Each structure stands twice: as structure tokens, then as C-alpha cells.
Length: 92
Image 1 (cartoon, rainbow, N blue to C red):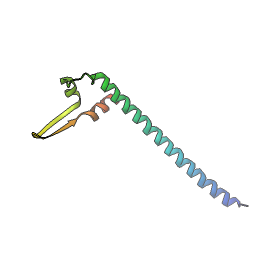
Image 2: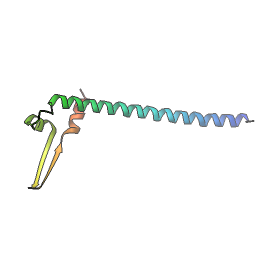
Image 3: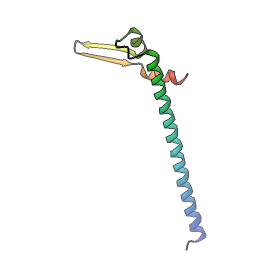
Image 4: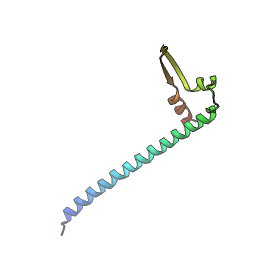
């Protein structure tokens, strides 16, 4: 048998655990919603620019590529604007 004090302590610990789990659940739900928004933003951006035309057009280059660094004939670096596009789409 449990004393009143033991019961109250156990109840308090269990409530703290419940509160912690509920907070984790809310954070997970928020992260899932943010991820869904990002996926939708990327989908909208891809559809807007009609990426799958078979060719790399100026419109696609201007919309998705920030900078191209050419180091030599065998090495280049491409900096994409994708984060900016996602951020812009999320603000719509």
C-alpha cells in the first residue's frame, strides 16, 4: 500500500512525464507542418518554372542558380538559390 505522500510524488512525476511527452508531440507536429510547407513551396517553384522542358533555359538558370565558379576545365562550383526560393514561397 502507498502512503498519501508517495502517491502525490508519483502523481507529480507522472504528470511531468505527460507534460514532457505532450510538448515533444507538439514540437514534432510543428516540424512536420514546416516540412510540408517546404515541400509545397518547392513543388510550386518547380511547377512555376516548368523545369522539365528538356533544356536548361535562361529562366531556369536565373531562377535557380546564384553563382557559377569555374576553377579550371575540369572543376566548377554551382551555388543554387533554392533556399531563397523556399523562403520566398513560404512568405506567399
